[in-house]
Image (cartoon, rainbow, N blue to C red; front, side):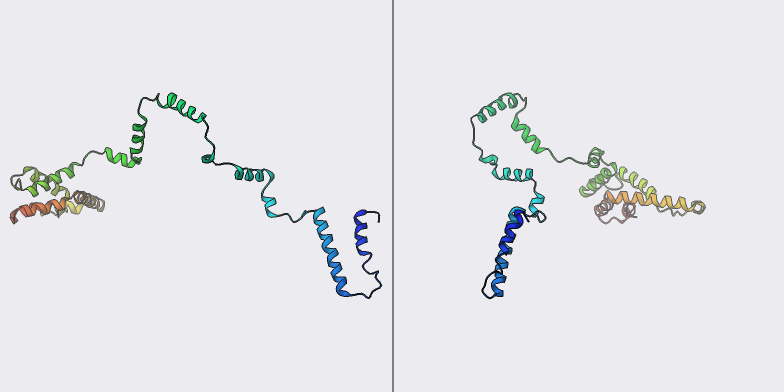
Length: 236
């Protein structure tokens, strides 16, 4: 063939078996290996890895390669050489921006750092709530019991309050026959509603420390058992 790519290969193989010496299999194998290695390297130079490209060739395009190399060559900001124009910029920034503000920059910085974290809407609503009057009156009775300023019979506020709460927290069992007959005529729903109301009133007293207040009032009575029934209204 007249193809030059084929001629040089034929020239490599033409002298393989034309020697007059007896053939040596080991030499023949070694020569064939050398020829195949030469052909392989020539093929790699002429057509470099067309089908078997390296992985990094697929992942990195030319633009990405340039960007990576630019990142390695780029100087960091703290290593940049300083220039006189920086001082001019700082003076202009201070004159036309900072000094024109009406407030002190240091004071505003302290105010910004001292701002508490933002509260949720629920916490804001709790802050806006007014003080609980029931908690206040129970706290008043507790303090008066601890200081022993007044006795039970001399405290009309406590007597009126205990009578009112006794009505709201009573269990519904009265000695009058008429009231018992009326209770028998009540439906299950009405009884359940009264029970829930009683439990609600008792839980309100419990949350506001009524039991502790009663114990303090009992201890302030100094063993006077006549007054205990009135104190125990809040417990039962």
